[in-house]
Length: 178
Image 1 (cartoon, rainbow, N blue to C red):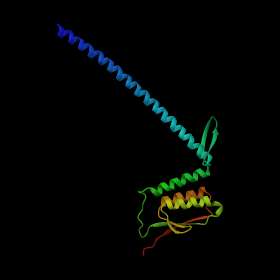
Image 2: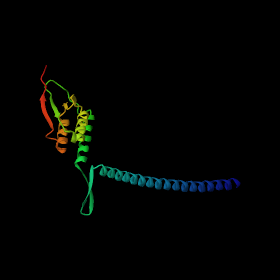
Image 3: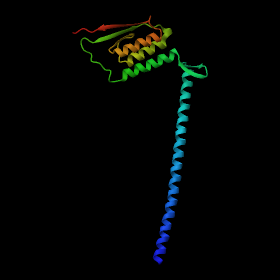
Image 4: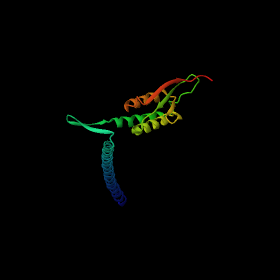
């Protein structure tokens, strides 16, 4: 009989301990879920504030402007912002490895010659950076050789956006076998 009483007490203790551990586990899970929700909300808020800071910086340097479109506000790129975006795209094209082409005997090249005045120094430096980024071969101070049609297309777009058509000449040349 004493065995049965002890056995019943141990069963009751195990059941009580199981209920207690289940409650503890549920509490832990609830706290974990709450913490995860709070963390997700914090990350989202931090991301939004980082985006707001970045947009304010871009507005301060003149790359974007905020315009009202009826009830909502819209961010628009300025000419300077478009130039920076195109330069970034050109540098990304220059860094990609899958666009490398063979430089065979009958391959097309583009000769880029420019003479941009000192007043437009910022555009001239941007153009040089883009040409270096597109793996343009430096021939002289303002003469480069491009070997990639995608890079040439981006370069022409940058020249049009910056209104430098009268200062930049892009000519297609065909290499001759030696």
